[in-house]
Amino acid sequence: MDLDRLDDDITLETCTPQITVANQKVLDFIENTFNNILREIEVRPCGKPVIVLRRIVAVRPYYDEADFMRLKWHIEDREVQYRFPGKTDDEAWRFSERQRARDIYYHDPTLFKQQETVDRYIDDIAHTCQVARSDLKVTGSPKGLHAGLFNNDRTDQTATIPAVDIGFTFSDLSHLRWVLVIEKEATFNSLVERRYQQKATIGPGLLVTAKGYPDLGTRRFLRALLNRAEPSIKVFGLMDWDPDGIQILKCYRYGSKKMAQEYGCNIPEMKWIGLKAEDVTRKGQADNASMPLSMRDRAIALSMLTSGEWRDGSGTLLPGLEECTAELQLMLMLNRKAEIQILDEGGNGLKEWLTVRLADELQEDRIMW
Image (cartoon, rainbow, N blue to C red):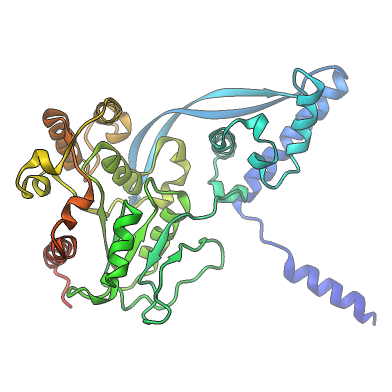
C-alpha cells in the first residue's frame, strides 16, 4: 500500500471545505459571469463583455412572521453594468489586475478614489448573489472595543472585538448581567478606567463601543453573543442626544439600506437608556449643557423622520422608534443637541447616572441579582 498516497488522500478529504447554499450562489454567479464574458469574446473578438449587478435603491422593512426578531426588507433595485476592458489600455490592465488583488482599495486607490467605492461594489455583488458580505469572504476587520467579556481581573482588559466567523466560540458568559453599547470611545474609556464593568453595584457586565457608527463586525459580535447567552442578557444603548446618535441606535437595531442582506445582525431588543431630552434639562440650564443644531444635523433629522426605512409596509413606525421620532422632533423644535459628556460633570456623575438608569431598566425586566 502506498502510505504517502493514502496520507495525501486523507488530508484532501478532511481539508475540503463544505460548500454552503450561499457559497454555491456566489460560485454560480462567478461561473455565469465568466461564461457570458467568454461567449461575448467568441462571438465578437472586439466586443466589450459586460458584468451586470443589481444595486439597492430603496427598501421597505417588514417582519418575518416565522421569526419576529428578524427584520427583513422588501427591496427595490436597479441594474448597473460594468464593461470590460474599459476606455483605455490602462483601465483594462487595472481591471484585470485588481481581480487578483487581496486588498482591493489600497492596491489601486487612484482607480477607486475612496474606500466607499469598493464598499459599494461589494454590496452590489452581495445583493446580486442574494448573500451576506461574509459569504463573499470579504469582511472588514472589526474596529470596535470591548471590556468585561472575561471574568478575571488579569484578563479583563480592553480588547478589539474578535471576528465572528465559522468555528468561533465564546467563553463562559454566565457572569454577565448586562451589555452596554456606547457611542463614544472616550466615554467607553472613562468607564473602563473606573472598572465599571466589574465594580458596578448592579453586577458585572460587558462594555462595547464601535467608536461611532457600528461596523458589521461589531454588530455581528453582539448578535452572536446575545444568541449564545443563557439565560438571556439585556442589551442597552448609550448615545449622544443628536441626530447622529439616534441614527446610530437605529443602525444597531435595524441595520441600514445598503446592508439589507445583513438582517441577521440586527439587535431590535436593544433598549435606549440615553442621552435624552429629559437628561439634558435635568442638568439645569439646558442652553449651557447643549449646543445648537448645525444645518447638517437638521438635514439628517428631517431625512430620518421621512425615511421609509423607519416604517413597515402599513406605514407604522418600527417598534422602539416611536421614542426616537419624538426626540428628533424635540431637537428640531428646540434647535439643540447634547453629548454624553455632560453627564460626567461633577465627579462621578456619569457612573451614578448610569447605575440608576440601568438598575431601573433591569428591575423593570424583573432581573434579580
